Length: 94
Image 1 (cartoon, one colour):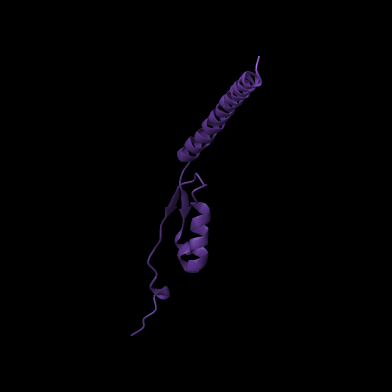
Image 2 (cartoon, rainbow, N blue to C red):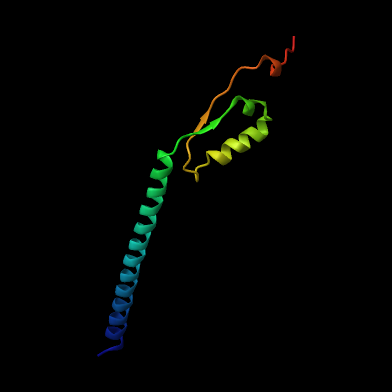
């Protein structure tokens, strides 16, 4: 048997091992994805987070940070924002 034949057989065996390992990796990813999907579905069945009108008095910068934290892409929670008009916080510039 020539050296070239031996190297070809070794390469094929290594590639078979890599493909088998990648198959097990895909199965592991499937289990992780199913668990994540289950968590997202469970969070979707929960009631939305409610924010009362007192939230409207919070500084806009802080409010944006709270909204981004509560409704970030990584979060599976739904948010429901309600507010009431309060004439005291409206400034008249004229």
